[in-house]
Amino acid sequence: MGEWEAIGGHRDSSSLPVLAVHGVTSMHPAWMWVADRLPARRVLAPDLRGRGHSNALPGPFGMRAHADDLATVLDAAGVERAVVVGHSMGAFVTAAFLQHHPDRVAGAVLVDGGLPIPLPAGLSVEEAMDAVLGPAAQRLGMTFRDHAAYREFWRQHPAFAHGWDDALESYLDYDLQGEPPSMTARTTYEAMAEDSRDMFTSGGVQQAAERLPAGTVFLRAPRGLLDQVPPLYPDALVEEWQQRLPGLSVSTVPGVNHYTVVIGAGAPVVAAAVEEVASAAG
Image (cartoon, rainbow, N blue to C red):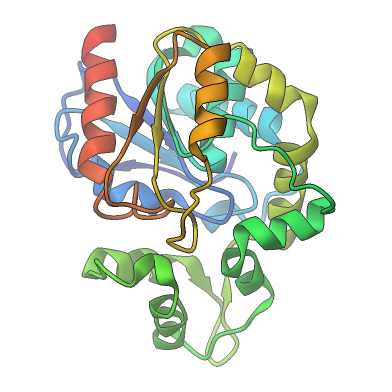
């Protein structure tokens, strides 16, 4: 495993730690907003392989490989068990971690991910990636003049039309590598593509979701990656999973999209859910 971080200042080392898992083209600083609202918790947030400062690590990628890496992170941090919170693809990794390393999980919160989404009819996996991920995937093949140009790229993204702040700029600055005028995002296309195929086509993803334990929390954003309706998880799909998993605790986080449910306005709700799960687990 490559880079991992303990986010935040002095935390209570006796309290149950939190392991935070980012999305498919994201990095560990995406959890700054949530970690700031968990002052009593040690928050461990890795850069998954192929992203951030772990982007030089080779495959294999896929949910099981990332889940095994999370166990390595806990070992390196000297942590036996943690509450695991995953956003987007990180929620799928969290489900795989629950399945393959259940003794390391004290509780889990899935944020707008983790429950399989059917591949849109008539679309290949590559076409589905473009349709679902949109600009998030397209930027991996782009170069940027400097940090200001990268920020401007994201300013045009509909998900961030509201709520732009210094923390978001810091997050975006972390994502850029290289030297002007040819800077690139830190996520490798190979990692994004292989992980997306796994999410859309792997039987292991379906199996991990079907084995989620009672008490697992699922938080849904009411708007999608482009701040659109319908969201990534429409009502019918959520209801279907509630019928399959009656022990799943489902809530909709009001007023957010797929990004801002963690990066911004939704962070207090996510942090509160994590704290509730952690407090119940002791």
